[in-house]
Image (tube, rainbow, N blue to C red):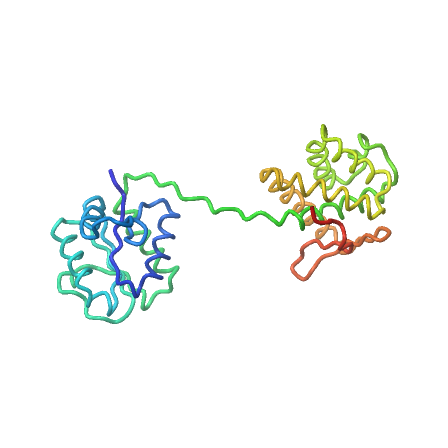
Length: 279
């Protein structure tokens, strides 16, 4: 059974309509909104009627502009005549249409937006008790590959420098646990790639060398751009390593010319600002 909601509104309230539509879609509801559901070239009235017919809930945004709109009045009449569940939202003081005066509304004059949204969701859950919703996952915004590569390279280079020259295959066992996990993910990614593996070998041999750092960071940036999953994993490992450094109270690490500290937000910062050249 459909769990579609029709949103009726004055175009003066389109910003509010778009926001509530987006938030309800993120919760898993199907929303009919004229701005997004009427295709160019379609007959407007016919498409509105289709939207009303296929919707179980009629949500109307009440404002002075809306109650003066003949289109909104027609949509209210149609929804009531066809026994749709009515869900008015009061956006500002206005004369509520006669046929809606006995219908309970959500008062956005008194409620903050998030509070009003919670009330709407409670009403909809009772309206659709049989519907299994699938809220949308918030899209993850990955860290900039250049910044991530520079930060990880600085951390790896500082750790390599502490250990001293070592065989690349053996160096992982000598690293602190959380940094070792970062290196393990990178080395797995770099194996079978001669240029990347060579840059890693050079860094292990001479971690303080800025050219070696730049070459390693460039290869890492390329890998991050190629694979978003790898980039997200490396960012998560970096955050865990950062948390470990914070908890241990080691706010500043200095190894040769490499300085790792924290900014005012608690994020790792690398003192060498010339790790990556442009492609």
